[in-house]
Length: 121
Image (cartoon, rainbow, N blue to C red; front, side):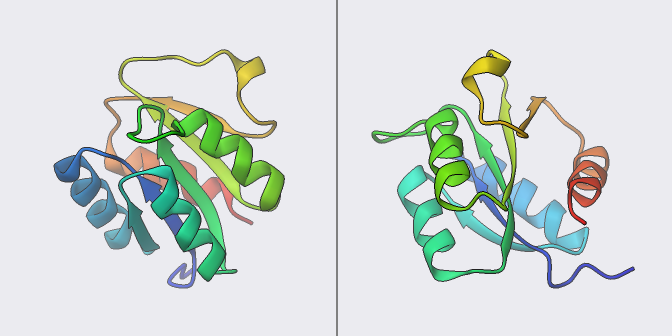
């Protein structure tokens, strides 16, 4: 099964980590749009109707963290799957949008890609 058309947005403010996870996910067959903050992520989502998954860190610069970004995405694009990550925080399930998934850092690229593939129909 090929997933070349599977578009995801990865939001991470640490440049090396963003580059690494984006590259790993591209190798796993995803089309990846990179964002270093919530504003950039929303720009990608507004431009691309084919985005199916948001993968966001909780700690982001600017006025919106990853949990708030997830809530905005759930409101505006309810079809998009959401995966939230952090190495510092473990959010309360009640504070996360319905249907979203939390994965703690550090994570391994293979299992992460398999989880994302599993979330998409």
